[in-house]
Length: 180
Image: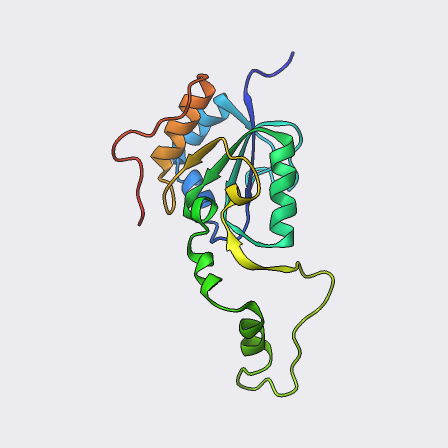
């Protein structure tokens, strides 16, 4: 018998993982939430790659090529894509590096740091290529909804899931958006 629950996938790009922590702050409502949704890729399942999901929640901005690849995969696999938190929506705190030259940052950290005589900037192909700037996710893909905040509150996540599970466009009432 097919599930009538929404399949939900989540991921974190360049950010602090605070939005995922806020999602988990739903606390005892998690047991009610699993009646509405089935988590695919998420910290609750430890699956990293989504497959054909109804909703994809993306936290964090884009600071490297791996972030872009992950975002493109989520956009392809998720019917509805949600930018979660300030980093996904605006670039957030990681975008503060946008005023700096990436090469200067790397040289400062790897070549000029105390005790780093003869150091080198890592160039291993296992390391993702840094982008010149940190970007919000809407710079690369279409975003269906945004869940603002830094982080969005557990109540905002709950309201979002209630609306989307009921087939309504998510709406956040007064008091559900915060920037702590």
